[in-house]
Every structure is written in structure tokens, then in C-alpha cells.
Length: 108
Image 1 (cartoon, helix red, strand yellow):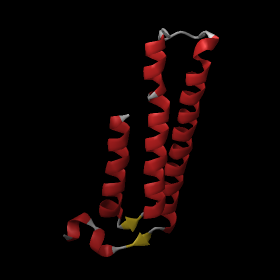
Image 2: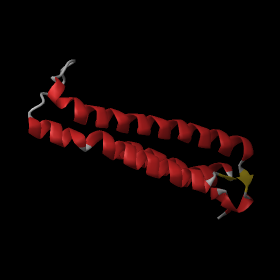
Image 3: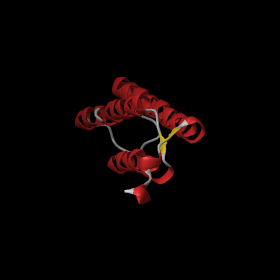
């Protein structure tokens, strides 16, 4: 997930410089925090599942592990919601973004 965070950061850094269009910064911050919490809620319970002895890569698991697995599933839903928000931010940026001519990378 560290690589995915880097891809998002690169997009937020470079899109104003390449196109001159500003993205909605509040939505960008909301996207970061939603994705941050979603990723941590997804992967942190897996540490407890491993300590409890759940084997990896099995299609079915005992009911004893269902609590932590449901928490991890909820985290993945939050991450997916954040990805949909990111696509909406891209749409807003490319259709209604404010044009700032001083933000072009070649004008600096």
C-alpha cells in the first residue's frame, strides 16, 4: 500500500503543474484520511489473526476468526470508498478545476 500512497501523492503534486488545474484541496485531504484509515483498518487486524493461528490463503476459515475478518472487510470497504472519491476528484479537477497559469511547470 505504500506504493499506492506514493501514486496518489504524485498525482496531487504533479496535476497542477502539468495541466494548471487546481484540485479541490479539502476533498484531497478527505481522500487521504479515508484511505489512510481504510488501509490501517484492513491490515492491522491481520496481525491479531496471525497471532491467533489463522492460516493464510485459505478460502474458508473457522468461525473463531470471523470478528477480526469482518473488521478487516470493513476497512477494505472504506478503502474502496476512498478510491471512488479519488475518481470523483479527478473528474472535478479535469472538468471544473480553476486554471492557474503560474502553476505550469514550464513557467517557473
